[in-house]
Image 1 (tube, one colour):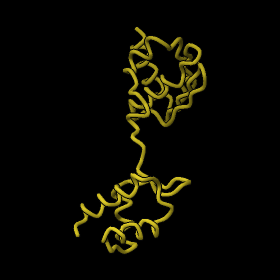
Image 2 (cartoon, helix red, strand yellow; image 1 turned 120 degrees about the horizontal axis):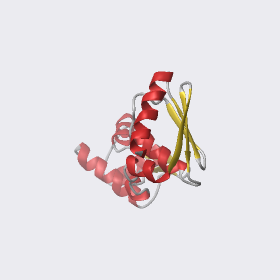
Image 3 (tube, rainbow, N blue to C red; image 1 turned 45 degrees about the vertical axis):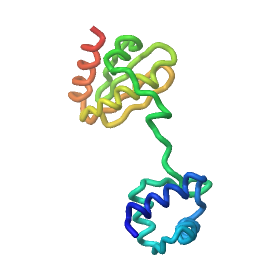
Amino acid sequence: MSKALRQKAILEVLERGPVASQEDLQRALGKRGFRVGQATLSRDVHDLQLVKTGAGYARPQDETAAEPPLPPVSRLVREFVLEVRPAQNLLVIKTTVGSAQPVAAALDAEDWPETLGTIAGDDTILIVCPEKKAAARIASRIQEMLA
């Protein structure tokens, strides 16, 4: 039987709920007429991007349905950023209360090469850059969005 049919059968088994182990998945497939080895099953698990949860293997949750898309970063910066302060290779960005998380997520989504990492609290974002010049470039970009 083909790989596509086997993987479709795996997804059908998982529609009933998580499967505790690959051995259990192998048995469920056997009941459906699929004789599959452990190595092949492991490749199928990888190909289907199944996740191992506390209850067992399951289909990944649809992330797009779980989280609505963020508004454009320029809009979030204009609406919520109050101040941008450089500190060597760091940027401290002050936002309105409760706004740091979505602004930081939008900044992270920009995937700027000058950014090594971002940490957000309630009203403050810390952006770590590899050097002072990179921090200045990002500060300039954010300032332009504020204008």
